[in-house]
Every structure is written in C-alpha cells, then in structure tokens.
Image 1 (cartoon, rainbow, N blue to C red):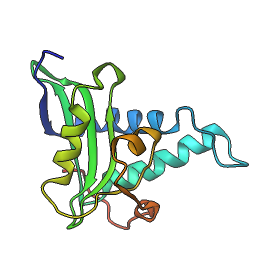
Image 2: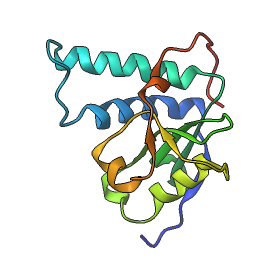
Image 3: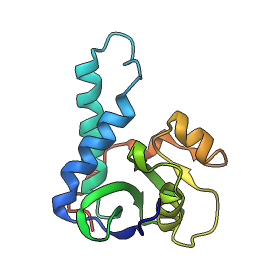
Image 4: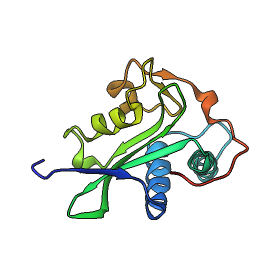
Length: 149
C-alpha cells in the first residue's frame, strides 16, 4: 500500500462500524453453539461486544485514510489495565498484509510488558499472535457503563 495510514482514537461516530465489523467478522464462518441459531449467536456476541465497548477501561484506535479519516480501514479494542489485553483487532481484507494489524496491536500493547492476553480468539489471531494467552473470562459482563475513550 502506497498511501500512509492515520491512527487515531476511535470517536463515538466510529462505534457503529466497530460493533458491526466485530460481530460480522467474528461470527462469519463460525457455527453457533449447539442448540443456538445463528441469529441468537450474533445477538449474544453483539451484547458482549457492546458491554466491552462501554467499559471505562476500554480503549479503541482506528486505522483510517489520512485524507478522509471517516474511511476506516481497521481498528483495535483493548483494555487499558496494567496487563496488555487485546479484545479484538480487525483490518478490512483489502488492506491486510500492509502492517496495519501489527501497528494496531502495538498501539494496544502500549509498551506494557508481559504476555498479551486476548478475549476473542480467531483463526487469524492464532496465526498473527500465536504467543497470546486466550482468556475468555475477560468477556464476563462488567457492571460499569461509560463511553469508550
């Protein structure tokens, strides 16, 4: 890719794209748990992702077109606690292989030492971050409700 990439904090206007892309990409080509419809599976993932996005310690960054920052190419969502915890990283297929996911993950880590923990594991994550520790307990609903910063 010859164009530069702009990385910026996610704005409220970006949350719809983040939520939609996260749910769609995570549930795509996945079978729902036994006894659950695909519609129910997507709805459950949507509720969990919405909870994560509302947590006071959640941070999100988008990779976008520097000439038009509303054209988002990818995003990462992480927890701003002491341990590096990546909830999700997504890059549109056409922009993959250009280091955007690597930079989004680096921004999420923010120089914090230790093993990277992840709350959502995908086949791409297994290839991209094989050293990451999968911790699904990080998905448990949190009682706080505020906006993403």
